[in-house]
Image (cartoon, rainbow, N blue to C red):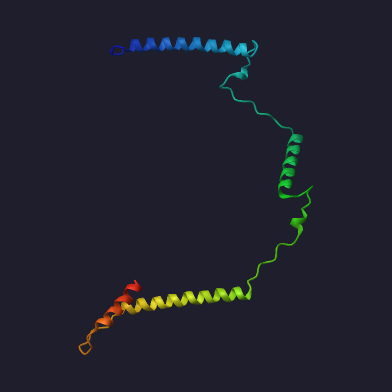
Length: 155
């Protein structure tokens, strides 16, 4: 298509042409709908019209409510409004911890706390470095190695 400047006259002519095509297509769609509906065009058959709401009678609503209650009763295991025998029994007895179980838990807790205290003591001892005094003995190689090993395990 050659590039030419679109003037208002050309744009108006294009709009008129498209509108005439649209009217022709709408007419053909209406004819097809009439054929589909055996020649009788229904006003509610248009796609843009809202669907009519159905009104349910009070008796119908009561039947629906009764049916829904029956469905829920079936799900819960009730029959004709009576609770089932499984629901009418007393709840399960509360579980109790045996003496051996209580002792095992207590000992495990004591071990964990002992380890935690020992670890805390190591880290606090490692952080507390003694102040050098002029009268202290020089450290030996063996003593330096043991302190270095203690420091590395503490970290």
